[in-house]
Image: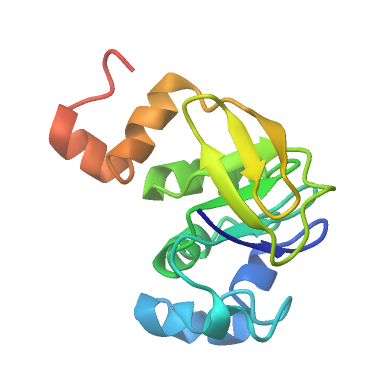
Length: 163
């Protein structure tokens, strides 16, 4: 359960990690202090573990910076909920263990308290008292996410056979 942080359409990896902080890419904790800074200057200071990023279409567009989902994860964000995601961002996020959920986000506003039921593919908006269905995460991706990312999954399971 956590608070929604609503962003718009076409949030790029430059919105997630402004390019002027590229020099911090080897210091992820420091880089995370600037996450979403250009889209919402208060985000990194006010986000709390368990919160959610909520957006429109094409979240994560742009470059294939692997650091973008990593720094979002470092903030404690539970999941990113959007109408759609850029393909490379989606895959990078699963690989680092950041859940991405596809749903109609129009009725969610910043500050809404959300609870996600991954197993039943539903988002409950506790503030407005309604549920939204989400596109279920494929089973093999859920297993990767449950392990905290692809590297942890491979250490635990040994390979991707049977996924």
